[in-house]
Picture 1: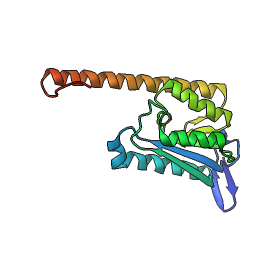
Picture 2: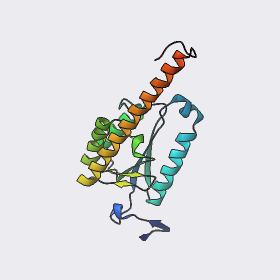
Picture 3: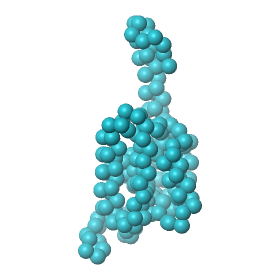
Picture 4: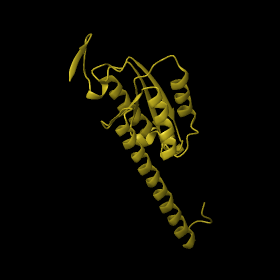
Length: 178
């Protein structure tokens, strides 16, 4: 529905319960240094996330960006900083805005850890594709299933890459398979 806040007219989703999401976090990530150096993917993620924050009427936005960091591992500087701030800051955040859920983690256990911290702090996850994940059991189950699918896709991609390298080695195009 539409609601007027001051001079702004904003669309508020059913998810926000009719209240503005004043304090939001944006998290963006790309896996490879090539993506990070070219900047296209990060720029697109941030543009979409900022647009979503504006739609939600956010007045305080904190951004955390990991460049060239795999989603398979939680040892990402900006992710760790974000989680620390969520747990220890006096700021109460309303939502975490992401481009897609797999930007948080491509490991089901890692995603479960992140979800638990967000759940403990009553922070909703909003994806720029329109998906909203709350802290209720159904949303958590869906996020965990999606995390498992991302982990599976990552394993398949790795398997195909290794097969391709083995074939290139067999053809003499590369020296060794990593």
